[in-house]
Image (spheres, rainbow, N blue to C red):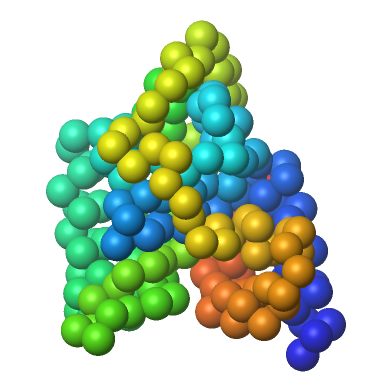
Length: 191
């Protein structure tokens, strides 16, 4: 079991470090989302280690794709769908809209069964290269900017904080199938 977790962790770190795979940690109770730093840098956004308001990212989804994306995530949040999965166009900071595919799963639910925290992956399917230019101005990124996010996924994965081993193993177990599907999709794009 430990070897399996190390293998998954290594593959995930490699994909995240290259920026090919974005990992996100959504806290619905705080209305914040934390993306893996390399993914945010890949898309041309400053402040790669800070959480952003969900509004900041929702506004970056193409208006024609937003209803479908929101329907899919709301179905999973409410417990009507076992997972979240959606393809949509996401506006980068300098390269226009990127076609992305996102998968996620609730890892914490409230007493009412609604998701409180979700984690997931995002894969850029766009064939044209990224050309981030200009960048966003520094400063607040929404009403929840600067709010603490208890152990974002990339921090759990890195092992930087002592005493997080049990939580890291639990979360890795919950997202392995998401990672497998996303990595298989990435391999298919390379072929």
